[in-house]
Length: 258
Ligand code: BV8
Ligand code: ZN
Image 1 (cartoon, protein in one colour):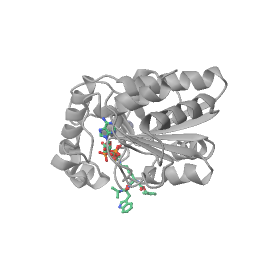
Image 2 (image 1 turned 45 degrees about the vertical axis):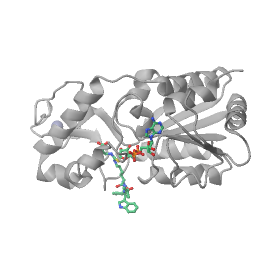
Image 3 (image 1 turned 120 degrees about the vertical axis):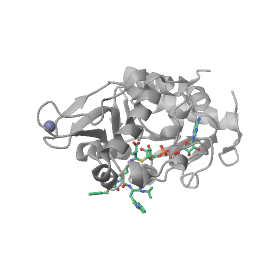
């Protein structure tokens, strides 16, 4: 495994990994927050990295309600392109390790909750069950007229996709910038953050709100917060333990049984 330095105080990386492993083995409630870095290892581009989507495209032109109102064709073309890209990708070792972590927690009557900012659906595809997709799901569409919500896996979608219940256009069931997150999703997320013993934050730059404020919420209730990322982030300063490396190496490493 490629293991980079870890900002873990005086402990060495191996010792710190061991410490987190034993905490995870004892914990009764674990919450996980993921971002696009976990799917980068499946070949899906992140948003803000060197090859990130926001380096080539402007969020204001594609991921806001104003952009959709101005040019729904352009926005749908972009989502069609991303749907095509994601359809060919599969969960990686990090997604699978989180499924195993959930299984272990449940086998000892513990609680596991996964909050993801990713819209690719790979956590559910891997088999994670307690998942809240706070920014929506690229495989769901919502009617701009009657609000009807449905699964849609057509690739490519005919543009613009129209509702079957009414004459209005469909939109991606994704939370765009400037839009409120789902109330139920937020409630479930805060419950999971306020009741966890350990929060794992995996592959997120921690720049987009409200997810960017989740680490302090868990810290405030005394949770042990661990960050796994290729790089340091604004959250690194506040977490208890931070490992730099690829999610596909680090997450399985935390579950190794020795
Ligand atoms: C809301 C849609 C209120 C696109 C997405 C000024 C100050 C503070 C806040 C704001 C502000 N201006 C506006 C806001 C609010 C805004 C916001 O936070 N903006 C930021 C950018 C400043 N937030 C909102 O608008 C939210 N809504 O606040 O509502 C409200 C209330 C009532 C009524 C109305 C409104 C809505 C936010 C939703 C945004 N939606 N997606 C789409 O996906 O189609 S955002 C986009 O960013 C993605 O969804 C993504 O999930 C999310 C987070 O990004 P990351 O996943 O972290 O990805 P990123 O590329 O940044 O980082 C990748 C990380 O992975 C890096 O750290 C990298 O090192 C690491 N990595 C890479 N490879 C690996 C790895 N780590 C491990 N292993 C690897 N292999
Ligand atoms: Zn409709």
